[in-house]
Length: 86
Image (cartoon, rainbow, N blue to C red):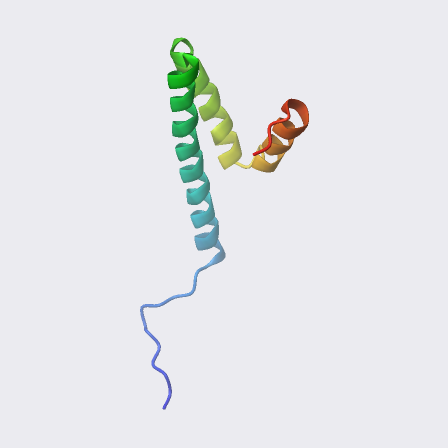
């Protein structure tokens, strides 16, 4: 007997995969920003500059989403120039 195939099932296209990847990047940036800004305000009294910091973080996040800056490059700079290992 031949196995029945669900007629509603369709394979993922390259566009579907790209969209899922982009959505995951946006979500990761969003969550990381929330964590980073909360620590900055709570532990380092960053409330005086929080709006400016948020603007810059948001700008860099958009550049990552638009693939103008890679996260790998950011991680490399943090490691080599600031000795921060993520």
